[in-house]
Image 1: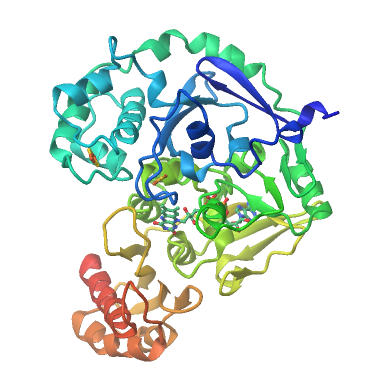
Image 2: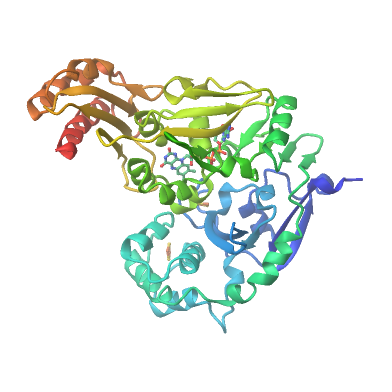
Length: 480
Ligand SMILES: Cc1cc2nc3c(=O)[nH]c(=O)nc-3n(C[C@H](O)[C@H](O)[C@H](O)COP(=O)(O)OP(=O)(O)OC[C@H]3O[C@@H](n4cnc5c(N)ncnc54)[C@H](O)[C@@H]3O)c2cc1C
Ligand code: FES
Ligand code: FES
């Protein structure tokens, strides 16, 4: 007999759905929410286009209780979420919005504005606009573009969709979901969020701990288990690489990893905070991090992806890494036995390798507050402005004296080597010289000596070097 804590519970169609994975041969812990919905008779509006977070055809909304005891509604790619990740949340699909007689304001605006042709993308578009409708009244063009950046429409064109968004969101966000909110909150509160969920069958284990200590105990016991935070990297291993992941510890329900701590000289950002929240929260404190995040993936990806996951992946094209290095950030690692702080510059040791021990987790990222004399800039070059990974990225840090002499300069580049790498020869050349165009032009060719990048589908090695070189000039122009 299965114990209670193997049951994952969430709300769909206004009712609690319980899935006992230990007594179930239909779904596994790595069944995606998209696969689950497509298996149901009444939720086939959701579509699979790419199964890798790139097209938005699978977009659904998920509602969760926030700190103010209200529901927040966000758009997610259902192809990037494993079924147990729904625990304690309300799943909302296009079928839940309206009926053909009574359309939701978003659906009505899509019809009125002729914003659909073949319809393949439409349910995903509607769900992204539903999340916008619930969050922003009278959104401006930038906010609408941002909400739609993760939804690909190949035939209608975006003008009518944007018109539909403008028309629908001129309302105040009130709809049938507002009326049912109290009831949904009370149902969500009845779901167990205290005792660890442990799904253990013959071939697979999936754990959802609710405290950091429980997660660390599990990590100690299952040292090869994959840590899943937002899952936007881990899910691809299943949906694209068709890997079978035997053990997962899902840390996305741990509140201790979602804290922001303001210290005297630094701000500590929890490893489990979503990138979208970081983008909004740190617009003033760390504007270059926030502006970089505005071109990171799409809203759906940033709603799920975390800072811990971006650093934990230790990818040479992880977008937050160069800029966090420029901010001189440190990673705080924790195990059941101790806590330690490592400069991010030393944390990543090789391609996808870090200093983290098997029993450790990334707890937070500590970013020193920046004095007014330090200039920091971030750059990302990609084939598309949004929803694309970097070809070359950069995080730069500069200190000048009153005569514009370079006291210190750090040039961190992504996409130029197996890990984020500094242009050390160029830095040495620049230190002590005047920050003027002539000096920068003399330094630019030295970038070619600093790097020996790869050629791939995104760029040739030569192209990457030229981009890296030209970013230095852009940095100079932006600081003038
Ligand atoms: C469509 C799409 C677009 C994307 N666009 C971008 C982009 O523009 N720029 C970019 O840099 N990346 C991008 N990514 C990659 C991904 O979204 C990011 O790397 C994201 O930050 C990962 O966070 P996560 O929480 O989802 O990580 P997860 O998938 O949960 O984890 C990633 C890795 O980090 C480890 N990990 C996570 N949290 C911890 C922790 N607290 N302690 C220890 N280890 C941990 C995991 O074990 C795993 O190895 C994109 C991905 C997709 C699918
Ligand atoms: S199917 Fe394309 S984003 Fe999910
Ligand atoms: S209506 Fe055909 S892809 Fe958008």
